[in-house]
Image (cartoon, rainbow, N blue to C red):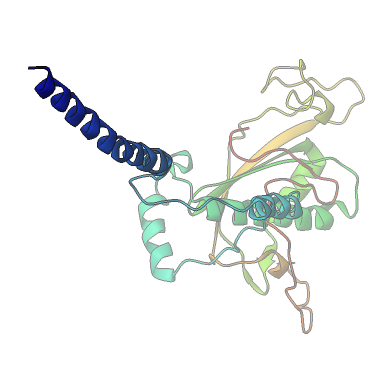
Length: 277
């Protein structure tokens, strides 16, 4: 009875000894494959996190990021010159005149390009009339040009003799040898005459707008005059303005008249604003 048990135990021991090398080889293979599997899994996980599903946007180069800033610095402070005024066609002007000339000028809409060009043109006309009327006088004339779509308003305030003289000379300003004004109609002024230094727009806390300062004894009387104006030609340039009787300069070059800005005084005139003042 004891002999079969011994044989069975020997067989089991032999099987165990035979399987030991195989288990060792399996553990060795698993130990070699495990780092590779873990590494591949980590790469795949990182790829899934970093790579977007949509279209990739390339990152800007650091050098390229500095270029717009430098370009901005080179253009900063430079004045942008507006496009020059282009006269409208005769048919277009005729339609606008038919629509608006019989309406109140205050109801007329505003064309910004027309406004800029013709307010500048009116300032030049006033300067020309001032030189003609005052012959180099030093009177300060406050000027308010306000242009709309086909017409403008022009108001002058200052010493009465100077304002009256400029008003008379204004009618004599021409476009070369051709008439400048289609309409030059005087209407009631909207402002009261006041000394320039008491202008509340320039002196904070000064007198209220529209309040006239009475002239003291011995001071020169002051007054305001206002006109509604329109032009015979839509394309008049400042360098083409002449006083009636002046000869046409020979071989005149228009040159650069500069930007048609909304400020700037000429010949001692006090140019105060434009629209809305």
